[in-house]
Length: 317
Ligand SMILES: *Cc1c(COP(=O)(O)O)cnc(C)c1O
Picture 1 (cartoon, rainbow, N blue to C red):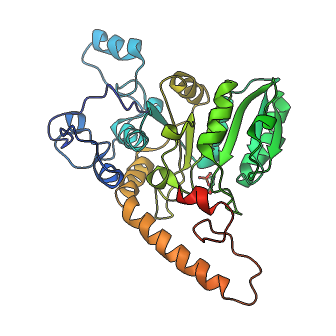
Picture 2: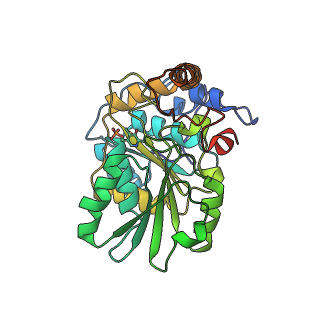
């Protein structure tokens, strides 16, 4: 539903500067599509299942190329979805494109299905979001994929892999005990064995932690949380580089994954305030964590920003 590159950025986009944008600036400007939707700041809700063409040649041109950013059929999206996808791509340096899904769980499932086959071993961090575990144990198993869980605090990365390991799903901080993982180190070990690295980046978002430039192949978000930010839309996304993009996109299309333009619009609107909300979340959560530490009834507080919490060094880095 959206390519970061090759998409017309028309006049009035305000994106002409060659200077690299800071993350907070990207959240406000990324995804503008003035060439398609007129000189507007934000792409409007664009509802369509069917598009009309001037003539057969124009239809063939759109169909034959099978590219995002060209009208084909509603399941392939419209400018509203492409705008959000492009904005999420812009948030991840080194990314080629982003696919959108109707939930974070759908994003995790489709990312895994795009790289796994029967006989493969999937590594999963033991503090993974519970529905990811349910997908592995209750669904992937039926299709011949074996999942092995590992302690998120391990540093013996080489011991994790075997000949059949095809992919590793990480989460850092992880649900719900917030262990931090050394993403660049794990990615380096995985890369030596051609193992695909996937990161559920929902807790940090690409605002606080860009994933692809740390070596991650597929960065997954439950946009339902911080991207949407207002508790009124379910959505997920997977952002990847050019090598895995065709597989990711094709799998999503085969499985019929699509999000509504209305939901995409709300998610884009949420993204515009991500930087100020994340800073507020950070301040408030730390305040609450420090208060909890002073409470006699509380045995332990897990928050990687606390200096005495395991993983604090990685969190800081
Ligand atoms: C909520 C969440 C998900 C799932 O997202 P949904 O949009 O609810 O399907 C996945 N991972 C993490 C870390 C989450 O917090």
